[in-house]
Image (cartoon, rainbow, N blue to C red; front, side, top):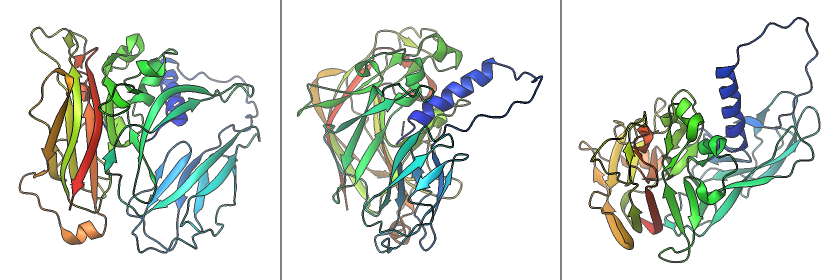
Length: 380
């Protein structure tokens, strides 16, 4: 549960944790601040077109969703940067965005550079999911100029018809702070061999240790979703931002799964619940985007009144054999898709998978594992 979320997530979580532990002290003297080491784009403004959504900004990429008829060949986006940073090409430079453009941001202290890929996306989400495409999330200590990038966890992606990459979201970035150098295969979401065809996605519920328990998040369910992950330390369930624009009416989702439940089911306080067995979840929601509901999250992905259609796997079992599923989208509370809103890109689609059905509330069994492969979304 839920797309993005990377180096900034780690830094945000570290900063928040330190803030919770340390009280601010009074300075005996005022010292001149060191030049800022940040080299981030924090906002983008575009004149001449109206994006379908607020732009998605991650650690190294910006996606702006637009209608297919918008002219993106002569746009001059303006960027907001971290304090003192500079950008090349300069903010406000007119460029042809019929193909992605690269920008380099340099920190105020001139020691750090970061390249952003800026894309204007008019195609819908990918609809075939083989889980063969994977990138590494890499982290490098900004305070050490001699540090080398460390490969920490897997990021799945698929491609649309026009070749645009659609990144899958996961909670791996949240688990990263508690991982203590664990290999990528030990993260909640990873790519493994032995899929129905080739490789597959493995989602596993894991313990987050003493640090996670202190944050009232003692377990992390393996999850994979359409959307992004932005850490909300005050309510971790709100960290998952589900949904991407989709301008077709979804009909069904077909795919294959295997599942093994963990041995001991616990609640959010790590109390064992005798006789309760863990279960997984695979579902999708098609919902209207409004000013008040720009996305769904772990608190409302099944209950939001903005949901128009839903598909959910109900007939499931614990099995180590690849098992085919076919779930159909059904109206929610008599919901209907408005043709004009659909044309205007007012709907989002989110496909969501989890190794523990109640993982968003930190109920589940450590060791529960869901394998997913060869999925396809059908639509009209």
